Length: 116
Image (tube, rainbow, N blue to C red; front, top):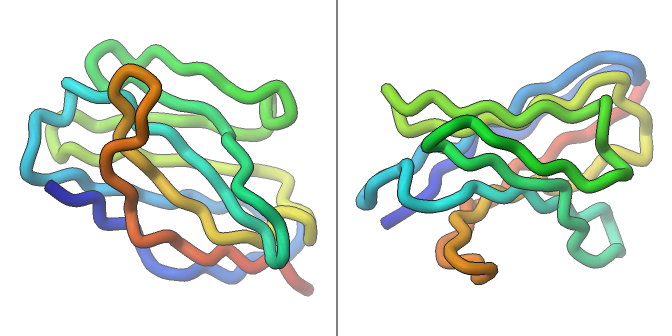
């Protein structure tokens, strides 16, 4: 069972970024996929989650309107897209499979750097 994320990204302020998280070794639709980020020197920050079975989403209020979660069941891949990037969005972004409130498996993390 593993989640493999896409590679590091560098973006200018105001741009968008899309990070992928490919699941393997389990039934993709059986678990939520949560997204969490960690800025340099900061703690983990939960962004929200998607239910791959029906595409239902839940966003942390801070990210509503600027973040979009999607899931492609044909490839067992979840995505997070963050728009209107600013320097404060520089962080390592993680996906994790969730079952009943517990994060079972984590992706390796994707560094997103926002800098001009």
